Length: 290
Image (cartoon, rainbow, N blue to C red; front, side, top):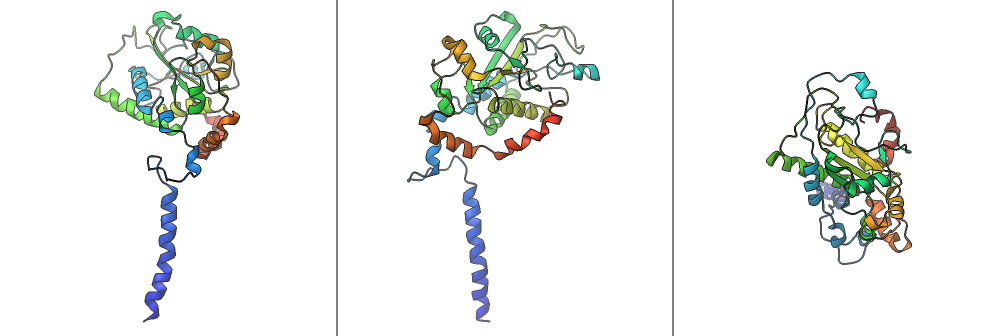
């Protein structure tokens, strides 16, 4: 009887320590930083991450939300297989699509994006948003004029959820449509476009673009979408800066692997979810989520 409490104590103490260690491994990013410089030093300063917080992106996404509801007609197989239609099969792509390395995405050239920024598409575009998927130190070193910096899936998810909540409180006026037929005529209503890019538009930009599409599909009844027209900037920021430095603010270019930012790059990569690498075998299903 005297040995029983001792055995119980020796049994439960290690379990308590394990629980403490596990719980400390799931600390949120909002918790206070330790006094000493640990691996958390690789995180950017709060002022750096606040360049375009998710709240700002949520407002922009709320303005870009499409209020169109597809008619209750059945979507034909021809419409699904037609790559010239946007993802809700309501109309053709407004921007000219270029051939790129991502067959499941619709790429646009730097010249097209420059023309969009300069307003050369006129009243055909109601609003557009450029999402810079690079890390904050790259973004602050130079970015496309008016672009917002969202480099993580959690930021995309937070911005979309906040935009959806804001849309429920303050709905936008319905856009006038000439008919409810499927598909509609090209240019029948002003467009709301979203363009993703990273340094080369080879990994981070395409992944976040596809992630937004998956979120959009998940919360809507097929084929309805809040953001049906998504694009990827071909060549990324590097090519755009080389062609149109006057449209970059500030006019600079910081490479992801710049030697002065190795520690920050290491920190951001440690924080990236490893599940993004496991999504590569899912390319066989990306055709249906276009």
